[in-house]
Image 1 (cartoon, rainbow, N blue to C red):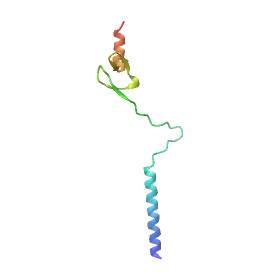
Image 2 (tube, rainbow, N blue to C red):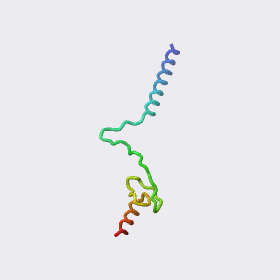
Image 3 (cartoon, one colour):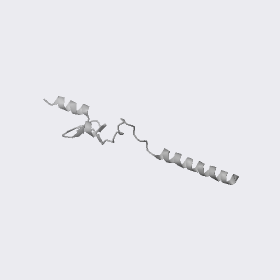
Length: 79
């Protein structure tokens, strides 16, 4: 009788541990109203200062992509 109870306890413990490990490896589901995680964006190097800038925030001038600061300086310098 004690062997049966011990076997049942070991099986129950193994199932419990297995289910906890499955839940731990599962990615969290987003809650209602929660947005998706941000997407990775391509970074480019400013041709003037060499800073890494998001490609969507750069302006492409004759020499290549420039950060907003340097692209504004080049527009101010032009009449």
